[in-house]
Length: 184
Image 1: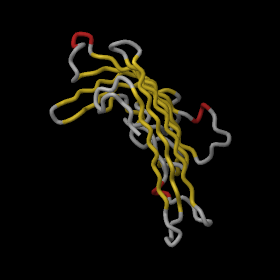
Image 2: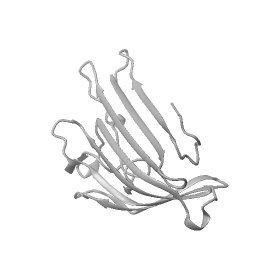
Image 3: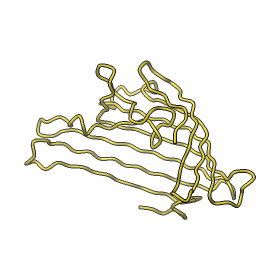
Image 4: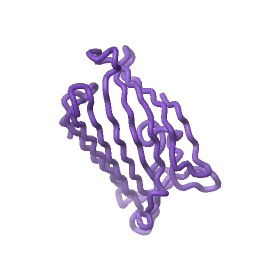
């Protein structure tokens, strides 16, 4: 469901997405995955827009089968928690990220035009706060399980298509986490 006023230069509206995967009972792999994402845009002023994003995902096996390891959720990177390398957050095995069966991601972003290019709809700045975690169980989940990042992003609608750059400061970095402050 998409109720935004613009797909590229959004200033108000919301999007809601539901994703689902299900393996049929006749297959050797028996699993399901369901994700829900809601993104809300609210015009604070003529030039400033608040964007709130929330995402939750759950997966598991059925009929005594586990969720296949290659179907695990991952987080980190541009589409979840900026400031961390892509797909590097979550449970580890022998220092290797293996992902998990549950995903929670949240983003708060304030979008605004470049001060000297206010009427130009090709470049937009934003400040953001991202949070997310990958776990195998919601029970016992604490704020220490989440990784956070705050920073500044630039979106440019270039002739090749939209490009986004960000500089982020990661928080609650744990041993083994892979950070990446600049992302493109």
